[in-house]
Length: 477
Ligand code: PA5
Image (tube, rainbow, N blue to C red; front, side, top):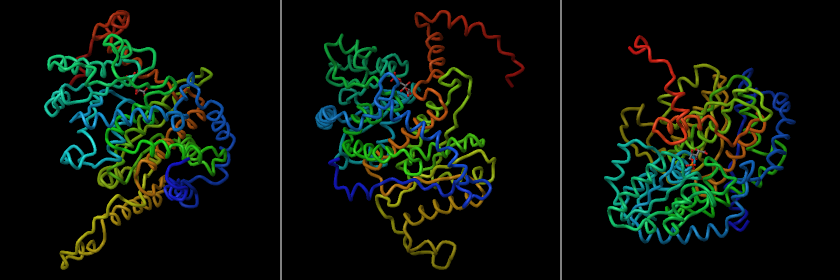
């Protein structure tokens, strides 16, 4: 594999602990060994499906090969990142959905939590923003803190037809023109190789530096291609480490037995739980750095599995609602519900064995035992104790939960987590017998937006919208 030593890689292995899903810990609410074994053949079929179809662009499974087939692209990205870091004071990603959540997640996971507020000398790159909305206030406020002429804009869109991204682009294009800046100097595209509007725009401008969002890679599976790698490299993140981590997890998950394959086992646990009415999947990292990994996961899980038709055309309405929750913050907001509310949830903890720093808690308030006991411990001990205590409280209340243990947070372990979740999603989709990689439910909203804004070709859709009954004023109170 060539990334650090084998001992180091093994010491960084992300592991799955699903004890708290079993009857041994949950009593009647938990899965018996027999129950889990009953999923063996379904799991084997899902594993085979992924094995047989990996790399197939026509099935949108090109993402499985990203850890292996990007040497030249990575070298090019690293060169570009070096230039961007030298030349620009700001780096802005224009994109939405899969094009935005990955870059935000990696930024938050592996950079200083107040990165943009650090003095330049302490940052490894330009100030960093991801504009993943079309809220006018957000755009105004972004423009208040950047200088377009000193900004590199990375426009990320596979289709180049996404209204949000293209609106952001039109605004930036206008500003660059007004500032007398050649678009080619300040813009990088990440888009489809051959088709799509960004390709056309680039050709018209005489060639804008462009990275390819490969054919077989959908937005939510794109963090490990240039969509995520370019912004990460600009931030000084070790992108080779990300890919090596993904390859390491892929290697572990090449094992067909669900008892040895953490992605397959977590897919089985979730599917078995869904079949028992656990329609909510809570992703709860005990790390501020992983807060946006939960966001990224929510899109992956929701958009991939929320489907109304099986692959053989039967109606189904499947999926599980993912919810993000941050430990310990949300112990003081949501855990009451998780512990005593309906038995409809599975909680996944993302737990760090070691945090990037220790923060000793000084002695003090010696006359107040309620406070004094904290002195002499560290914040790391406290957050880990609270994580263990929450898992204990949930388990005691018969609530399903399991933990992904992360030795420490770095590019290699983050790469493992990304690939584990992608594989878990692909296995779960195969078990549900659905198309994991499309999003027809999102398309309808896109079309209605086009119709409302008068895009040509959408007159029929506009008529359909206009034919809705008039609102009943009695229902507006
Ligand atoms: O996961 C997905 O496929 C979506 O979230 C897309 O990434 C999002 O809709 C943006 O699409 P595009 O890359 O075509 O602009």
